[in-house]
Image (cartoon, rainbow, N blue to C red):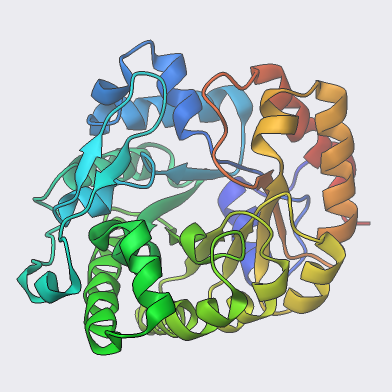
Amino acid sequence: MSETMNSVERVQTVLAGGIPDRVPVDLHNFMMTAQASGMPFPEFFGSGEAMAEGQIRAWREFGHDVLLLENGTAALAQACGCGVEYFDESAPVSFTPAIRSLDQVDSLKLPDPYRDGTLPELLKATRIVAREIGDRAFIMGRGDQGPFSLAALILGMDVFLYELATREHLQEIGRLLEFSLQASYRYCVAQMEQGAHMTSIGESLAGPDVCSPKLYKEFEYPYAKRLAARLKEENILLAYHICGNATRIAADMADTGAAVLELDYKIDMAQVKAATRGKATILGPIDPSGVMALGTPELVDAKCKEAIEVLGEGGGLILGPGCALPPMTPPENVHAMMEAARRYGVYK
């Protein structure tokens, strides 16, 4: 196949509702880049230069279209005062809440993306990648966690979910979500200021594998919708990530106004396609562990073919893993995904 678009043109065509020369490919590969660097993971994830170099090296090897820049799910929480543990062979994780009760919400201080925690290094990584290859590759600067997930990390997931269930402190929950909305917005904008083409939030804690669709609609949906609308006012497109089986909330996710829905392998692809057609682009939904990390190139090929046939019909698909690729994902499986996009993702 002779490709007629570069990666930026290809992805922008899909986002605009058009038909590209082939289905674009995203790699959610920040842990793979850490593994390939040979550096200790804590050192790698704290260095903007290292993260940028890793992403550029991977792009040169695989030739994927979308570079998703992040270091996990804890950077914004850390900047808000949460305790974070860095691991030798995985992404950092937020274990210690920033506050112990909703009574302390008003003591929280909005983080400065250019000063607090590892956010400046992550912005540096986006800035370097955008400067070096942003005319040839589509750069998505992750805004880390969205309002719901960030609020859960700040208060502690168990306490936060308990408070949602008991509904005894709705005003305080509202203030915490408002704080988290502002923090997410500021970091998303900062990512765009580095030259990213698009930004993204993760909200997996709000998905049906954790919360009921009713809780999602009441406590997540309004804030995601407001964030997407506020960013859109500044001509910023938002990608919206929820792991697990998000089939039941896919229509609501699309109605938030997010341009891209990052969805996992557990979804019912046909139902999701019907619910989102003409409203949002789907990014995913290949199993990052069972297929990409532990499967064979032949399995990758088969799963990518199926996804393209169902979700790529009429456009609206960026092929990729439904969540982060494990560090030891075989490069040959990534190449197989790229080849599948070229083999099956050409629009007749």
